[in-house]
Image (cartoon, rainbow, N blue to C red; front, side, top):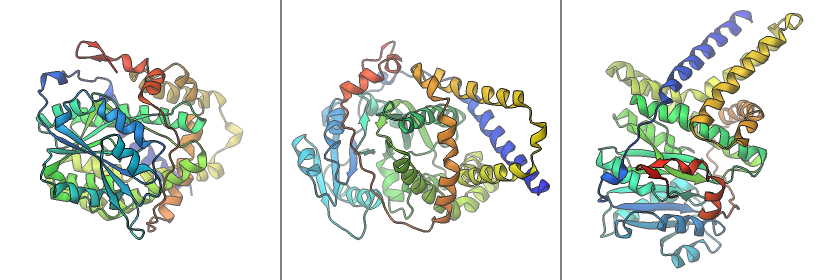
Length: 415
């Protein structure tokens, strides 16, 4: 048992050290003048919605507040098996509604594939597709930033993932903290290194030529991860737009969060089982570290489960009579300061540093959730996440006022 524990600890230490070194490349962020790129790319902004009458209106309003020419984008709402006023509200606000009824094939992946095919068939052609969730709000600069990135030749771009309701419960606060850390230490770091970032399911911009090439006919519960993996196999990386913010509604209870994250882990394990060895081999064969890093990313659920196993074995192997309390204090302090650095770089409000004190409790719940996701990885049952936080852009600005004061084109951000 001691040898097994040693091997686990060595593997986890190596994996952890890799990500710490990776995070060092997030300490700088290049300032770009997006206004210098003339608006010329056209966008189909696509929203898959199932019974989202409580939140769809504010999202559409926030899109139409964009500082981007109105004639260069169109909003499409895919009303998927809706039994409420989602379609009616979307139409009244100026969106083009595509209604879909198929009780046997339910879920975001099916809805998006259905919507994409109908948009492709329209007389009007778009340069890129922006994919949003119905509970989102988007910053006014989102399309402007994506226009700039497309002009630079980027094909798959992930926007900044933020939180619409961070102050609701200890769950939403923990998720908010986790997103800030991930956005800075993982996404921005990978982008700065020229590696492929992770698609987050929303806030994504995909060039039309790429979407037509790969399609959205993904077959796992995490179709975004499957799409980015297939693209990476073909040499296309996902880039990161730190200034294109999307604000997402987060679960309020542990039960809601558990169910959502378990679905993510089921899908993650599905994609890892199908693509890990192929992606790793391609990375080694072509000496392309982007693919190797992408393969390592697919292993994240397995390393999480290894953390749980190592912790369980440590209970039996650890000599509790020789416990050094000061060692634990130093370890916790070091981790706290490391995470606090991400919050500092992202200009988080002061109370978020207090939320860091119980964030580790939330982080530990990933262990049983990941085990459950692995056990039920072959299940594909779709479960709708109910959204109830009808927050307006004005209300969001009031909460995020401090963070929205970051510089924009040499002047204060007008958000």
